[in-house]
Amino acid sequence: MASPYQVPPTRDSWFAPLSIDLIVKVFKTTFFHPFVSWIIPLCFRAQNMKYQDTPVLVSIGWATFITLIWVAGVINNRLAFGLPREVDLSEEVIVITGGASGLGLLIAEVYGMRGATVAVLDVEEMENGEARGVTYYKCDVTDKAQLESVAKKIEQELGPPTILINNAAVVPGKPLLDLTLPEIDRSISTNLLSHFYTLKTFLPYLTASEAGGTIVTVSSVIGTLGAANLTDYAASKAGVTALHKSLAAELKESHPEIRMVLVTPGQLSTPLFYGVQTPNAFLAPVVEPVDVAKEVIKAIDEGQNAAIAMPLYARWVDWYNILPIGFQALLRKAAGVDKGMKRFVGRNGVKKGGAEKAGIVGF
Image 1 (tube, rainbow, N blue to C red):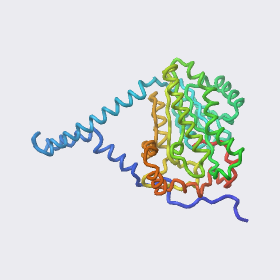
Image 2 (image 1 turned 135 degrees about the horizontal axis):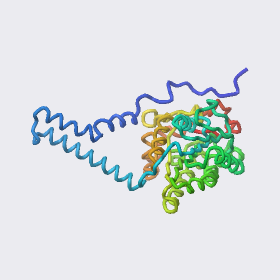
Image 3 (image 1 turned 30 degrees about the vertical axis):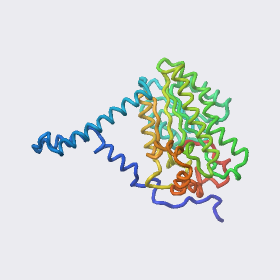
Image 4 (image 1 turned 90 degrees about the vertical axis):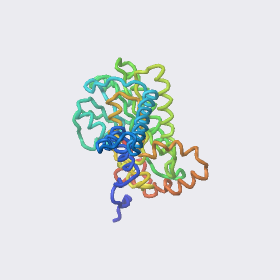
């Protein structure tokens, strides 16, 4: 008897070993790093070259330029994000939606092992059963009554929440003509409305804390680009990004002690996107959850406001929309972004068209 589930296409790995991101990373830690740049003129001087010699002058000029760029970046971040808040993990209570798998589970496990108190909200059981320092609460984040009940339990059992990571998401992965109205409602409720519900539920705890708090919003680059077979997902992620930016503007005035972290990754190598074909492994590599988790954890630990976009193209994707429409069409065709969902399978080998089995999961 044939299996009712689609078998995902075979490929070498989720992450191509060579990509533009890897090349840029190498250059940022070598020729584009201030410390390394100043090593070069020192090496020339060690060879008894004079300051007026051309190689020494050129290397000093390059090192000065790179240093100025680095200083400008520090000033830019300070102007954009302000001063950090003090974070004491022993005092933090972290709530992660969709934390039973993928990116959410990875962050939960890291913080649990480091001594923080973590509450995971998900309709699915945790993939690893139990994790040290992590308490699981079965909760549908689209259900306002369940959220209110779980929030009270968390306050009583763990303490008032101080960090909220909105990570829950679903991906039906079907053309709009094939989506049923209940599927659309479920997708928009999970990917967008649940953010309003969790914020309304947990934000009062964060604003009541004298030490402040942190809100992490996991959006997607698809919210800016859009893609075939992702109409519901793209629309909801565009809304999530707008929600985050608007809330950040509000809280900057009313509660400046709250830190906001916006995460807009490209394709992640998590079960949620199982079977999705990478448009271009060199220019748009699949992102490993551990890399995103590192950046999210760093921002939370340092008490920073932050905007995290990975891979490299995700940091520049906003420029796409100012390009001529014809050029945009050529780029989409060359990248193959609208063909990536043709072999989409989803979490746990979910039957194509069986969105009701996808549930609410994390990235």
